[in-house]
Image 1: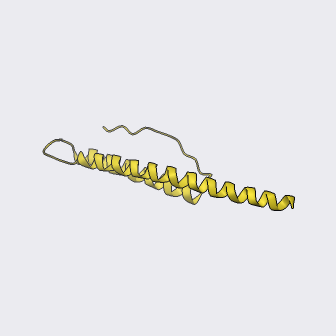
Image 2 (image 1 turned 180 degrees about the vertical axis):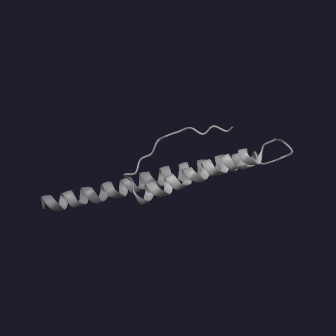
Image 3 (image 1 turned 90 degrees about the vertical axis):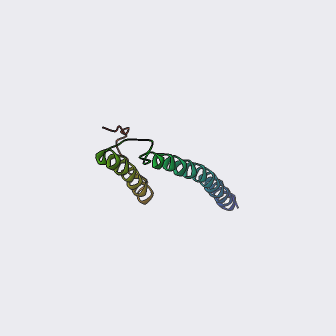
Length: 88
């Protein structure tokens, strides 16, 4: 009886946590995609001037962050040093 109540509570907490995850994931991934598209706009040579090295820095920084995210989902305990991006 008591263990059944605990199992039900755990089940509903799991559903609630997944709903929270989905809500936040949808919002954050859509926001990230929008911002990545804005970064892509920087490639317009008629509005901006940049070197191959600078464009590579941007792409490498984004790819590195994607790799960190992949690793965190594969091993959630994995941490890393947080360092802000700065172009040369």
